[in-house]
Length: 385
Image 1 (cartoon, rainbow, N blue to C red):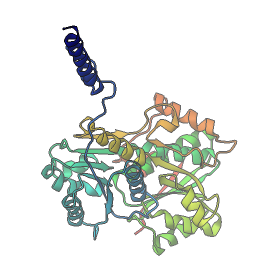
Image 2 (cartoon, rainbow, N blue to C red):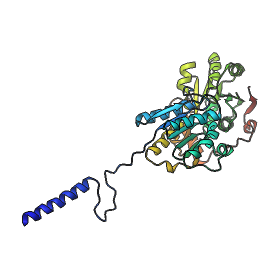
Image 3 (cartoon, one colour):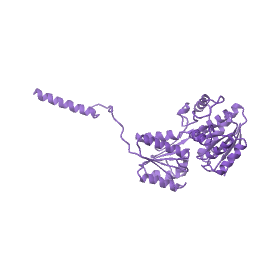
């Protein structure tokens, strides 16, 4: 009898240990199993380009590289698609092609995707759409009456990093500035108006005589005509041009290279590509926004089945702390050409004042460029083409 009881007790103990090994709970235990892992999320990522392609050294390339880096590191299937033309129909066609091929996460950089999103997102509830720089206004104009739960879009406070760039340029000692925008779309206008406000504030502090030539190329790429206009600017004494709008920076850099001029990059730290291509030391700084961090944040959330925390929102990303490196808009500390007039510490102090509210920057894009020239002379040239 004792042997039978012993065998029964041993069997019960073995079953209990097996249950524990499998993460089972005893009655009344409400704690999570210590070795529990989140459920595997089945997803694959497609990126669709907008006006440019993945070698534009700007918006599309940065988004592509961020997607590819994340997917390679996490063994996630990834592919990019380039529309056959700059049309809503072709953007929709690429989105639908990606979905037909099994991709269920679609990443799209640029406001031009608004109509394509409006035409597709409501029809594919099981597909997650991640948009960069597509505003709620853009989506409303495209026909969406509400933001669908399967869409997240990040927009950026470009006026803030534009301000930083303009302020830095004047503080570093430049007094003849230029702003060359691509097309006069909201994001580009915010960059430009922020740039003017920063230059204006720095000129007031320094008592400097500062002038700014301000124009749009009416396109997101450089060409001979835009380069010729930039040749004129630099020959007339312009020292540094903030070239803002996809590949249009190439025209500013080509003209600058002829006269040892300077440029300011945009969206990403462009010092490496500009200096390496057109001349060492050409790039004074770059007004950056966090495209790559946004992509990685959203793909991480999707991988952890937390997209619901983001879906259905359009968020404006800007300053999240007084520490420059933690923000979605910033200047690159490693490549900015700081000097004794404007140091890295001065830049950090500027960001701290912006974060605290001591410095405020207008995001009003209905104003005119001249409205921001209280302490500087603004020569608003409109569209160059």
